[in-house]
Image 1 (cartoon, one colour):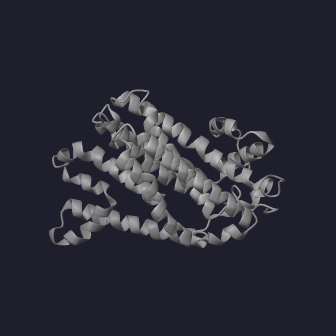
Image 2 (cartoon, rainbow, N blue to C red):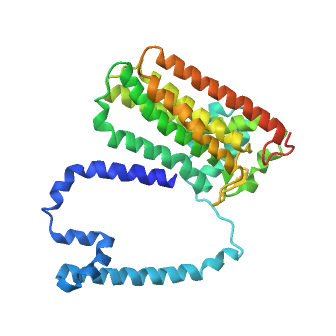
Image 3 (cartoon, rainbow, N blue to C red):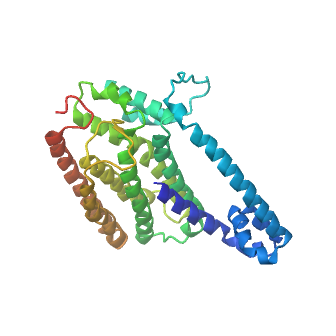
Length: 343
């Protein structure tokens, strides 16, 4: 996820800076002192020591001293985490998670849905890893679409070929979001808190369904609605054609979330975050086959003819249905990780 965000932001910055690159040459040379890399690069210009080079040397020395000083203090305080800490108290204020919970509430009905909303609210407020994966990557995607691609949206054709181009772009991004978020909703920095649902008398299939409902409500529903509105406002596509571009992207998202669940069925927020990842890594090799199967038909056939969209959507529905059946069989055989009883 970090690599994806970095690539998106780098692309956005480079595209938005193209119009300003020609003006940089007219700026005073002192602007280089705004770049920390130039401070250390100044050491290579000692043969021609100018006031700017000497200023860079001084800044590099100050930055190094600060890094070493602060770093030593941080390292010296690492043992503080072993001491008993006072329970955190939350200051009263506006609950920023309320709109997200209201958006997810229609998808999370019943007593088990209420328990899922309690866990979701706690993790949105306390688990920065989950909150970052849930909100940061979709926000970066919207930034890329409406900043880097905004000038090119008007070039889309108003016919079926334009729908195919928009569907291809959205399908690529939504499939990657599904792969990332499908795993994030099973992990937690406080995995012990999942006892709320792990010990409940609930169908394990219902637990997996609640996972899909959470990411579905918080990501593709608002994201694709915003994307559809942007296509209608900024492209020649009509309000009738824009949803046609959203359908394969939504199905690609659902396919990838189900694929992640099939790799390792797990109860919501039941697994601890691990830097080395979890087991069943060999099953990720199937992604090499699955991902082209999802995206390639959209690229090749979706905007070519009137028969392209129904055929591609039918293929995606068949893949999704096959994965759901495989997930059900795997769940009956292995149970659901973190849920007791597991069958």
